[in-house]
Image 1 (cartoon, rainbow, N blue to C red):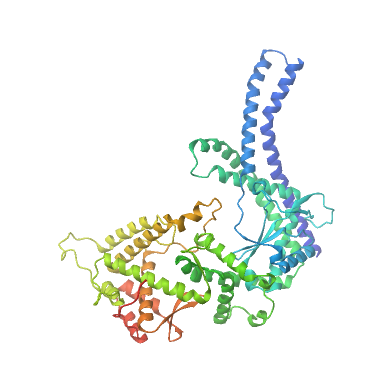
Image 2: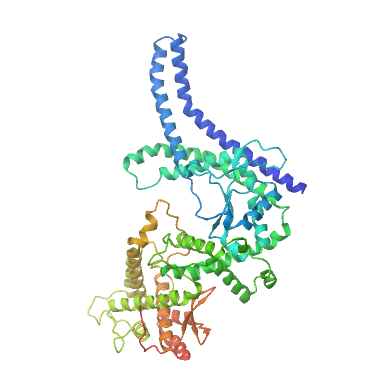
Length: 597
């Protein structure tokens, strides 16, 4: 305990020392702004009292007075920009106390045990992280209730000032996956940070730095008229200069705050925290798989899963069952889950799920005809089946553009795709044309596809430098598919669904989960979709949901495997034999027509 207290005091002293250094930079900037005015006042007073007579002093007064006025006006403008700039706030879902009284009670008990002020409020974030966030900047216009300042060193000195406590932001996957004791242990070092945050010097230094950072963003924002940009250029130069001067001290201040909070939390649930940290890593792995494999396909189809946090529990349960990553898994499930601390977990889950879609995919803030929630029970029909049939329809539209002969009966079928990808392309000599390099030609088409897809903020893209070998037919088809997807994404971005969130002044930043898919990946996805549609329409297969891998094909009640390797052999080597053998084993008839959207 004594070692912990010593470490907390050391971190607190370091944090306060660097906070004072930041405040001294602020004071020096103010002094520089007031210096010409002070000199002008001295000269004017000296002239009026007869202490500074003469032509030289009169000239100095006439020169310095206008300069002082200009400097004061410029300083006032810079101060106004800093004061009115809105520091960035993390997009979160607020949790009212009446919606989670048990959660608030647990956090307050934890703060009392740590000897720090309780957070002013609680919010959820769709991510595997937790932190404290100060939301008391005047530009936000709604400072939370003030809390008594706690001493960061824990020396027991009485509070001398009042300042607002920060908001506690909790990762929603933690609430659903962790038990109550584990969540308490994970939050202990975070809540301990309210002590340093309540110190007036540290709070003032943080507000100053956050104001400078917000002002830099305001002065560098694009799309402003030339006159406004010129007026903000000077303010931007000053704020950047001040921010560079504060950066080192601000970083050291935050390190001291973190050290003080971590040392203070050592005495609380230490053994439980070791176990909880293992669950943090497991939650992050399951959350990442759920978002990229399960949520992303739904978002691309205009559907957003409304129970993502509950889904991460299912994903982690499946992960633990398959790989036995969670020791003592069965025993911990008998403990109370942390989501029981919420009065209506389903409502909170839905709100954080919609926020996740907005953050990671750029979806609208509200539901609409093209942006609907989907429950897990409806996911196979609403997302998986629709996705496969949409991709298959797009594949056949591109084949129509390429003038690929239709299958007998003029109905879309898998045989049409296989025939096109395995039929040798006619040589230029046979076509009476000048010889060209087919790989170079397909690369040129892929390059044009990149240009088309660059117009879209979505996930379509082409990579004409993909080192993976492909046949000329598959390369050309992949490039044209990529261009088609790019055009569709560009059209969606120019419509109401694509532009509405971006026009909102409070539009959220976009954090894409994955880089754009290459043209080859798009081709593999579309061929796989065509195979799955054929299996559903000719062999009684059904769409399914795998919690770790996303959309899956169910044949005879079991998951169909080894399909991806057969598709890649077709794309890379132009050899349909492995895929045809797989289709025959499963009773799938590629010559039969399929239903498209």
